[in-house]
Length: 602
Image (cartoon, rainbow, N blue to C red; front, side, top):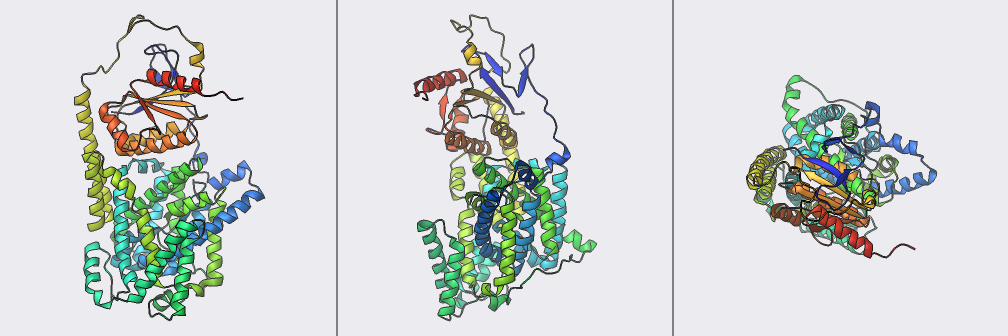
């Protein structure tokens, strides 16, 4: 069943008196047909946001704001880039190469104004497994292939299909990755000595258990100290760079007390003072075939993470990104990072959010963040050698805690049985098998559950008329006269959603809702023709409702069945965020009553 969105304006309070908004037109028979919109050209779709902001006008004041935001992000990215690289089974310098080259290319070519590219915690599990099986050369080849795949997907305009991944799958694999990341940091936090640490979860836990006799209390003390500093700064000084200050304190304490624990220099040697010479990994048909599944996994995870990050930036800034342009930029960035000895690149949600909060004006902040990191490497690389690995383990423990999606996980556990099944299946497979198994099985399972829900909804709703019959003028009692004021009332807007509102339709419906120009004072979403709503759609609607509430819009959800209303309530759609009404007409009438009671502006 397809999902359609009709944009309606009430003419009067008669049963079917609606006028279609300008994005649609109405024919003589009263049926709805979309207005044809000009298809954007190839150049328009793939124009980087950097070009967009330059066309809009970029002042020196904007540059100053981007310079401050870029420095703020670089301070956050510096310890994270090294920590993620070490946790991924490679040297810390490769994390810096990735943040510098990949981050610069993502900002220059990307379809998001605020996206910050670099190594991401979500890749730790996948990259560590690839390095364990194929070494760094295999990882480099897989990343190079993934970049080509992402560029191809972007140029074929398939980026929007990534949005079809259901919300329980996203939360499930993200939480699973967080668990594995935490497990991977137990070695550093406890100061354990291991000849080699398996990438798989159960063998890892077994190896860590066997290494407990090598426990180092000093390493644990430094890890706890780092955690306390991070937590304290976030509570009492949230504007300060907690990660950087925490590892600085840990390094000073380690050096001052001459603690015998591993540091970056003791395990990896000194960091280089410059970027390496560009080069490509060795390529053979056998190696190509061996790493192809890994390349597909990197491309899929990179696409998901980068587009999720871009959506977060959109929600914070009110701007819209271009999905396919962003994917092409991510592909180029992965190729560039590989050429300079890096690891996979993706959009990083935390650093991107930091960029927006720091007052960035556009992609220049991301470019400058990469430049700041390069300056650090050229000037202050030896200082990084004093950083204790237990401190970096504590930093990644905080990263794992933040990415675990605890609230969303708990929310989904309280929703429908199908969503719980998808969530837990994806989570457990990600932890105990691998990431691709979790995502693949989760998506397929969600699709089957959707088919079951559709069949169930048809059975429940067969007592209703599928096509409304013509009605006499006196149907339902006394009719009210046509009110011209109602037809031109821009304070009240009604949208009707028709069909199943599920993860496959969320992107299309959200796109139309986000394109509302001037925010109305009352928005009514008519769910009379919606037989079911899944958690992905409900979550998207909740985010949209928060945005409208922030703008002062009163939101009504009308005509919901008891089943649909339960799904919406579980997602957090209740008073005062939204109000419910039996019909769109009732919601419009009540909305106008509320508006009439508001004091008029002087």
